[in-house]
Length: 287
Image 1 (cartoon, one colour):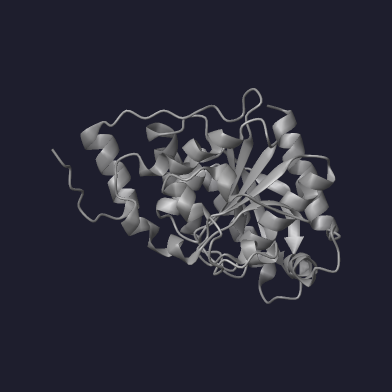
Image 2 (tube, helix red, strand yellow):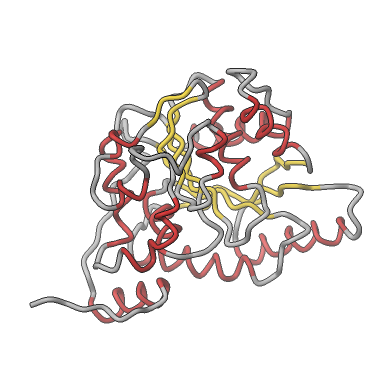
């Protein structure tokens, strides 16, 4: 018998699956043994520096001798372009193909700046293309292909909480939540907190929130101190740790510009991202 799913929002689908179908799921403990440590760069808002932070953190970890895979799960494919990959080129496997069952290894593109699993515009239809039960597990299953080959996988996620974001979170050892003072809203963290709680309860009990990183911070922006105070309070209310590292306005664009210029094989990281890299390493050393 064929089971036909209604066209639900992904969060509604997850609740339906958990509460009604009681569909049994499990997740690998990605932080144990020699398995890759997976970090999802998370925010349901755009313009917070997810792609630049994904790139900078990957570069920072490589500078520390770590083997890093960058995974582009955003249909905009800005991370892929930063690594010099044309997401519109024919014949290049993408993370969309991986979600459809292709091997992750076959989609990895080695570049001078590191290994990347690029995105494609096809990801924009993921919420409609992947409707089967267990669709939130596709990336986690694919990552099993690279166990032992990488120390870290950094996932650049789209600015929403659809099936792509859920795949990222389900597969993750921990999420790094970004918040930019100029676009942050008080309702952002309660929504994320509910999503994370559902994720732990239904799919990935070992999932952790590494912490909140404030990005694009500018002392010259009007009411910046008030916006920062809102993020601090919202983090406390949601139970999210607030990392010591902050990323100032302009740091992200500097990293992206150097990567895209192709003039250097080892872009210089602003101190902000060096500090963030060290904080991430310390987080995992304690686990």
